[in-house]
Image (cartoon, rainbow, N blue to C red; front, side, top):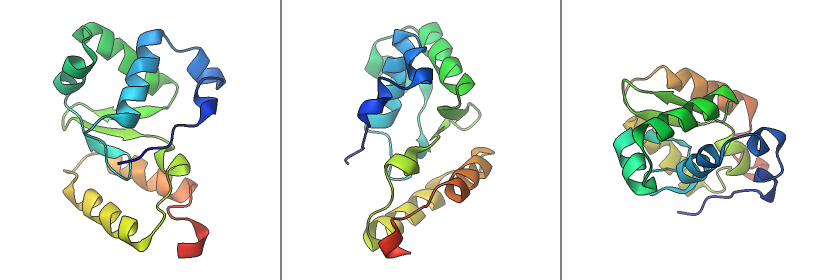
Length: 132
């Protein structure tokens, strides 16, 4: 799966102020094998800690930093992560992707982050204009 990461990632004021570990974790959640087409998915902390080879405390601190600047939301009860603005930079580009997105939503267990996903969908166009 392809995910767009804008070059402005490095010059964004909030990103520039993140710790190195938080930047690494953010790049990880944007590009890891667990992600999906809509930016809300299951990511147990242990997977990320193992993949990144970081200490649990480092990971938790980085996630708190990312949540503080509203880059991600995390539901520790269900291990669901939501990347805010994911669909802004990775809009659905075809009817096939829309179908895939619907399946992804159906696979997410009940979580308060669904409300955040809905807010994201309202804030950003879910699909490119030619498919709406």
